[in-house]
Length: 133
Image (cartoon, rainbow, N blue to C red; front, top):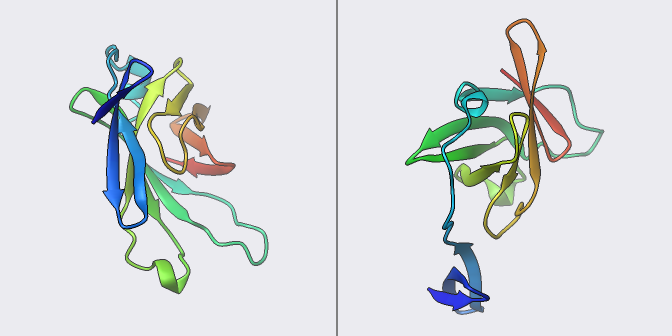
């Protein structure tokens, strides 16, 4: 770990070099009730355009260790990516209907939206994909 611009950054070193992989969240309030009640599994709906690969088939919203998290479960992956485990991201709630992904990597700052679409139906919209519970 190292301090960069007043933030504590976690770095990883491998043969390719050193890269940032995370940062310490110093202020994180309680998870809002709307997000606590949104915990559960959401499945991808709809289809992708011809030739597109569905990278995620499910998203789980969980609260663990005091943090709101999104667990992304891979779907139909190209052969070279088989065996990729679920990826887990800490979410920073920005209201009852939106949260941003914290950290570094593929989706930092990406907004995940939560909405109720009908009686007993909730959806998560992430990276242009719709997931329904």
